[in-house]
Length: 574
Image 1 (cartoon, rainbow, N blue to C red):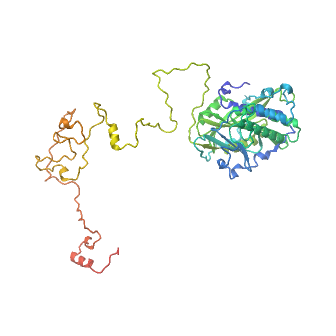
Image 2 (tube, rainbow, N blue to C red):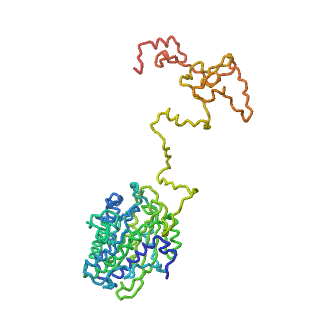
Image 3 (cartoon, one colour):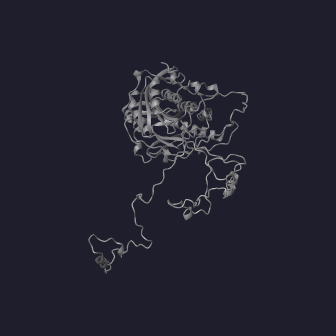
């Protein structure tokens, strides 16, 4: 069986995280045995996150931006937080952590490594490994707990974050898993409380040194939990080999990588869990279609989580166990059952990838129930800014000749990424100038054509209600000229605005393009019927509440009514 080229690390942004999950499955199969300390199977389902008071408000927990990447919450589980705005510095810590753990356990040869090699790296153990797609007959069933996610349910809105915070996700991992990633994440992700030494001779910064020191103590603690009943050698092997994968986990975009060791009715059971973020701009329907097309032996469903739509994939994988890690030194293969969920973030370009794998198919329903509860706990936060396009790697050229600008090449103008483009005022703009000064500044130069249509502005003392400003009524003497209400410029009346139209005499309109329409003679207003309804306007001293203003009742004598009104009866309004 060979891996499909279309789903390789170059074409699939989730391939690196799948490689981490396969590698953790190899570690559990090779290093866990009957001496490993295991949690009871009920630990995966003993806690009910839905009943916890903080389950519906994970963003109310003080975890970010300066808190740990994952932290244990009493009676809830381990809360994982990851965001697009805090990727870390990318500093390498694997060598530093590996050397510190070897010194902590007194040195010695780790299983599969050469003692006098001087350094210990993942390549010595033939890690990482890549899982291959198993035959369709080995595919696990789509468990009822996963199928229940396809039913309609209430969805949550993304929590509003501050501008610049990007997109953030939080979820709850059951307490049965042991994280191999540091609680504070890689260097530069959060502000640690671990004492950071000063920059040493090797040039390692305080943030990197603090991250390496924290990861060293964390892996030693996990090894003590898993191998509490054994000697120091199994603890050293597990801690050192896990430390060699620290840079690989960070490069894969994984924010959480953990293993699970359970005791199911006296039988050992192991699983691996990886949570990662990857850039993938396809909508969920297109992503599900791509997965179903490429993963020909997998079963892909589109489900609806409280955080939004998601694609869930179930398939069988064949994972190699390298010879240096196996007990007999021979390379072998293990068939695992894997479930993988893809949940798009609100920014439109990032996808949350959660995957779980186990080599015990008889415990498939147990792990899928915990996996479904984990997906229900996913919550998103977003600052409202859509993410940019997926970055494309550009090859770096050396000794490139500088490009000279030609007159045809326009100058680069910085793009305003937020809001509409702004108009920049000229250099001589004076916001405190008066209106008269602004008019002088706006006056065009001599000989320059005027823009717009000239209009006549009435003088300041113009009274539109004066009798002389009204047009002549019909029947008046047309020889008497009516006053010009707008102060039209004529030959004997100077232009109050000092324009050149006054010297040219009366303004003559240009010849129309079409013959003018001669209006019909106005009809005489004496015999013409009036339009509208005649109304009586009351005098200024009219009192609508006076008794004499009330209308008479039909058939009543006005004199008797007046006497009645003038009687001693009081008004109902006081």
